[in-house]
Length: 486
Image 1 (cartoon, rainbow, N blue to C red):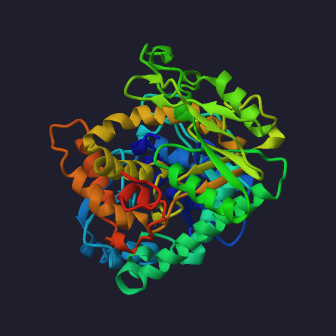
Image 2: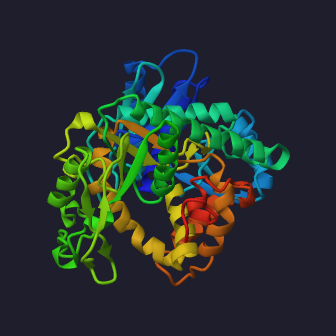
């Protein structure tokens, strides 16, 4: 999403709601349906007429081309601004976060704080939409996804994803952590260890629930796990296998890596570059032949792919499902029906895993879902692969492009969705990510992004990684995992 454009649009939206419904408050929630879901909390439910009034007021503000002024200050001085006396979320952030820079914005006498930069006037916004969502107070804000685009993205309904975001909101309520200020407070004054244990227990409980759902259906012979980069697929799959074993099931993990056709068969993308993530780079005929035989109780020889030679080894591994056996496949194409087309749907269970944070900086500043995955990737790349933060950021656009092509279009195909985000994890990642980001100097094209991420992490108090259990998904990224060895 075009961050600067959307941040400015968000300010306009919040001001429009304040002008029309001064006794209401706005909470920006999460990405949904190719937009961002917001909630207007007031004395009554939001109507279609209210949404139309908001849209008209926003258009009026935009056409008036009102100047937006920015004032930078230290958070310790921010508390003196009486315009935020009614904002408990801001009070928590300022009181319990380390002293850091705050950007205060003013538009026609209306003030707000935003983490990301805004345009200098409302007239820069030329395209937007506001849609009612659900039966109560939901509103979806829509803007062009990328800089230079002049169309709004098509609305695509994602009911399963919305359900998981709502689950994450409930987890936040259970943990009593609505925002970064609340997390910092418990880190500073409370028992952060207890919070971590309860958060990890919620993960384990959901894993057990998914395992129970799988084993309750005797027809299921194949489970696929898919998700975007740094979602924690490896640890999740191994923990799921343990839960399945606890249910009397004997899972066999099949690696898609072993079904690569070879380097010379890798298809090209639209730019003429080799597309190593294309599903057509896999030997789908052989994979499906093996899956059919395995689920029928036959033995097969699973190939071994050698990444150094770019070819398969001459001899594979003889594999057969035992009684009560189940196949587990982890890979980016796990939700794509093309991958397992020879297996009937009634015999398959598809799982989508992603890192969908419901934690906000404050009511008006959400944390994008891709932000946490990016920081996870920076830390893991530096620890396990010796890749610099600059190198990871170099790859990130390509990674995101691949996700948009190979993963996100299929997420609603999932029979279950698992949210791998841990509400406390940014406090743990802070030390390691900041250290790597500070190595990016001002001559780098990624310097601006590095500074933005460092500023974002400055809101968090550090949390000791030794408090994180060794079976945690987070340990896959910070080292010390029981399941993921560097």
